[in-house]
Every structure is written in structure tokens, then in C-alpha cells.
Amino acid sequence: MDLLHLLNQGLFWFFVVMTVVSAIVVVFSQRVIYSAFALLFTFFGVAALYLFLAADFLAASQVLIYVGGILTLIIFGVFLTAKIYTMDIPQQTHQRYLALLPVVAMLGLLTYGLFTADWKTVTPAAEPTTKDLGQLLLTTYLVPFEVASVLLLAALIGAVRLARPMQEEDRD
Image (cartoon, rainbow, N blue to C red):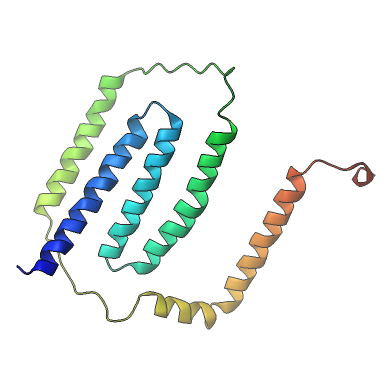
């Protein structure tokens, strides 16, 4: 084994452990802000694992959409609602041990599949996977792509219009 292969394996397992541990923190943390920041590491770990699969477009989408958009929205939501202390939400868990049955069954199925599957390995393509996608978006699917963007822009304008308070002159 050469040094590059060893480094590649080490990085892969680092990102696997980081993703799994941060996902566990997301689920079991008592504070929402800790869960939100652990979700950041989970999303980055998943993006890194996409890079190991030679899926560079999925990795970039993961970072842009989930880390850049969704996680930012979650963190702002947590910060903006952090001063609400009057909510009394019961946190009782019922049938916790009964819920362990499907969890253990799924873990057993995943472990069985992990060790019995015939894993195929392929070498990544020489050019990025985004080249074909970009060609299709700017040639064959240009019109549907532009229609979708105009539709999303109209939805955004409508959401802003509904969210802002009505002015006195708008109430005719």
C-alpha cells in the first residue's frame, strides 16, 4: 500500500466517524443550538463522502443547499426564538424500549447487507460529472430550467408580499 492510498483511507474513515458522531449528537443533544451546530458537521461529512464517491455535483449541492440555506435558516430560527421561555412542552417519552425493536432490526439488516454485499469499485471518470449536466441544462432543458426559475421567483415575490404587513394605501 502506498502512502496516498493510506491517506485516502484515513480521510474516508475520519469523515465517516465525523458524520456518524455528529448525527448522534443531533439526535441526542438536549439543547437545540448544539443539535443545529452538530448538523453542520453532519452535512459537511455527507458532502465529503459524496466527494469520495466522485459525485462532485452532489457534494457542491449538499454544501450550497443544506449548509448554506437550510442550516442557516435553522440557526436563525433558533437564535430568533431563543428568548421564548413561556412555552411549556412536555418531554416525556413513552414506549422507549418498544422503539428499540425496529432500531435493532434495522441495524441488523444494515450490518448484514454491509458484510454480505458484493461491493463493486470503479475508477472515477476523468472529467467532472457536472460537464454533462451543464450541457443538458444549457441546451436540451434550457426552457424548462428557465420556466422553473421564473416560477420560483414568482413564489418568492408572493411570499414576501404575504409576509410583509399591509400598508394603509394597500387596503382598498
